[in-house]
Image (tube, rainbow, N blue to C red):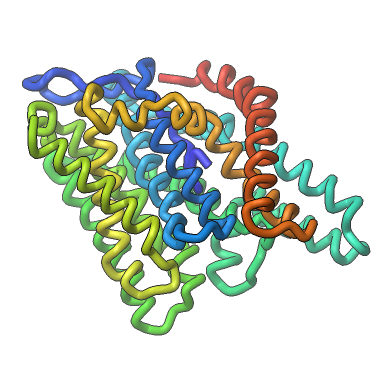
Length: 374
């Protein structure tokens, strides 16, 4: 996804205003390739996890990288619009989201249903797949999985798309409410929402909630999106301006954050209490530090690292990669392929479908989407 969700806020952002300005300005006309590079890394991690590649038991964190990045970019977009126009157009916001998300999703579901129309053994199996497609189309698949239905199956990865879409539905309204308050109250209130979501997840876990419930529920995962929202507010308010001129602390913190993410990608386990109690908080902080370093120091080491052409290109088509990778892995598995042969075939098919999706469908929708930019 432009989110494993996620991956759905545009990775376009101008460099921040010079130190000393009242507040850095968000202008989406500019471009930071490194943010797309982050998406590229995230979607590769998710693929490796779902492919069962040894040594990547924690690579599901790619979804959470998408979540934090999406929260940051969407909030940046809203702050920019309000800063430039004095208000926020909800109509334009939702049109932009629809044009970014729906065309590629329609393509996936059309191919999925067409395939199973011919491959299904009987009408009952066809209806089963049709119901799964509806769960995805109406963005409820996170809740169907959270409450133990174990559906959709070969579209199960779309739970994260549902989580992000539910966030997109409510966050602009919360944002407008926050903007009615004094500026010094906004970040603390977002922090309360973040810690409230974190605490709620722990409370559910301590009372016997299933792994599926705490992993898939919007209420138990919204804190990752809120971490990105909080970062955008702090940056916009000028409270993080010290990062621009930090010649030692910032590079060290950025490097440490990348090391933490790498460690979690290798050692993490999604069915462990530690993940939900404290590791997600560490993960959110690490991703926020990486994003901050990329936007505040576009000439820094991390920016050069995440601006590698291959990563930027993968990030540009990451939504298509995310949409297609999971059903393709299931399809390759149904052929009896295993191990590296299966992973390589699925990766090749995944890239092919993602490229077709981007150049035939997504890019055209993105051109139309620009009409509704601020």
